[in-house]
Image (cartoon, rainbow, N blue to C red; front, side):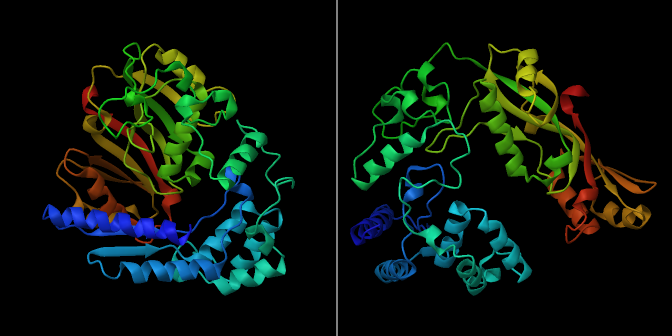
Length: 402
C-alpha cells in the first residue's frame, strides 16, 4: 500500500466512528493489520514482499494517525513473522532444513508471538541463503511449486499479475468465461443465472442469491469415522476436507451468504486433535435430485480417503443440533474408578458414567448443556490434553430414534 492507501484506511475508520457518534451508538472497533505475504498459485506469487523498514514506517504512521480516535483496539501482525511466512510459502527444499534447525533451537510454539524469536529464524534463513525468496521473482523463472497440477494455467496467473502491476481491473467472475481461470470454488457457476440485481448493495456471489426455482435442496446427513490419519486433523480441518470432497463429487450444496461463501455444514461438538471417533455426523443441504445411494457412491470413490459409511436423507426430521439426545464417549484409563467419583460431581442426573476395565464410558445427555459439561469432565481427566489419543466418540443417540 501507498501512503494514500493508508490514508484511505484511516478515513474509513473515521467515517465508521463518526456515523456511530451521529447515531449515538457506543461502539468499540477491533482492527487487525497484517502485511502482504505472496502465496503460490496466486497472481502475486512473483511479487516481492515489502522490506521491513518500509513496513515499520507505515505501521508507525497508522498508529500516530489513529491516536485521535478512542474506542479502537489495534492488532498488528508481527512484521518479522510475515518474512518467515513468505519464505515458508515460496521456499524450495531448503525450507525443510530451515524448519529442522529452528526446531532444534526451541522454535516449537512459534504461532504465539511470545514464543516467536526472529533472530533464530534470521540466522538460519541467512545460513541457507533463503532471503531471496522474499524478493521479486522473475516471471520466467521456474518455481518450486510449478510441478503441482491445479485447475488453472500459469499463463492465466501471469496475465493477472501483469494486469495487477498496471492497475488494470479484472471483470467479475460472472462476466468472464470459466475457461479463462477454472479456479472457482463454485464449479457449477456456468449453470446458474446471474444474481438478481435488486436495489441493494449487498448482492454476493453465493448460491442463496440465485433466483433459480429449479434448484431444490434437501437435508442430508453424512456418517463417517475419524480414525487413522484423520485423528491428526483439527475440527476445522475435517470440515474443510469435507467441503473439498463435496466439491470434487460435483453435487451442489447450499452455501452461506457473504463475501466468503462456505458450505452450510452442521456437525457434532468438536473433538480435540488425536482423538478418534467411530460415529461422526455432518448435516448439510444438498441437491434434491441426487439420491442417497448416488451421494455415497460419489463420496466414497477411490482416493476419497474418508470412511463415509452411511448417507441418510432427513427431509422431515429435526436439524442435527436439535436432534442430539446423548453422545457416548470412552476414555482409556487404567485407574478409571479413581476418576468416577470426581466426574459424578459434575454430571447431570440424565448422564450415565461407567467405570469399565481399563476405560471410562461417559454417556452425556445433550439436552442440558452437554457439550460444556463434557468439556469440564474431560479437563478433570486430562487437564493438559496430553492424552487425547485415548479419547473416542463411540455413538450418538438421536431423539428421532427414541
